[in-house]
Length: 304
Image (tube, rainbow, N blue to C red; front, top):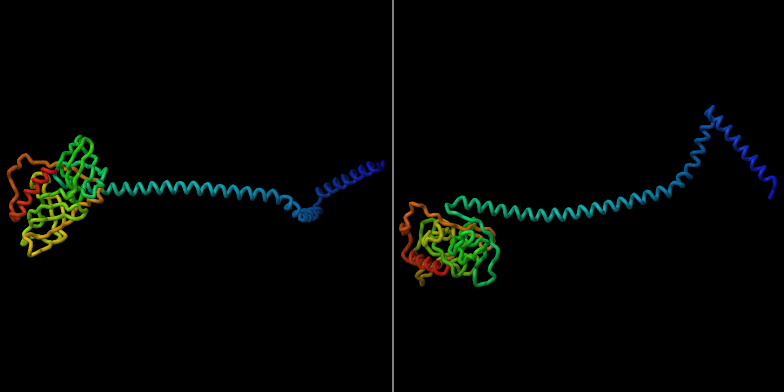
């Protein structure tokens, strides 16, 4: 080891310290070194930028990854909220439609003079040879066999079997169902029979010269004491005049929406205290229609 090396290092340190102190004093007392300091700072700035580049790059990557994760989380959250809100919207649309149906039923119940009770369909018969539905009202609610059932548009049918909690309703279109009616335009009495199909009804036993037209509205006549008078039943859709037949071939379609309605009304007929049970309607139809009406009423009372 060279014995002069420590001495040389000490001397160099003293010289450098002296130069530093001298430069500090000069810089403090004058502005001559400011330009030099600016030039040196400008020269070493790229070194500072390069030394800080890894830290800045790491911070940028961290922010980018965090931002991507935040965006992804926000997307997933908004996607879930969209699904929830969409399902709620569908439910609200269903509730709105149900509200409209109930409002129509409420309006219909206010127009009639009878006592009514709201019921809902809970089951539809799958038997292709019958047209029956099940409603959620039974004997405990006052339902009884033979009770009329309507919707906001007209007659649905009648209860043919009532249990404690539910009742079976035979629709107008069932083959075993018949209802006395009359033409609203002129009061001609007829009988409306079901044909076992959803949208067709038969109006038989009308003479060739009967006053009935395409588009006539048939309403309940009140005969037989089962259906209150005045409820829409059917609309005449076809009239066939065959010279070889004694009667017209008249068909119609139900006014009520039998295959679409969900809410119905059970009807209790209110008989006024001063009403005369023996009083009958004026005979505005022919004798054949009246006789058929009596037969149909008797059949409906016996068969339900």
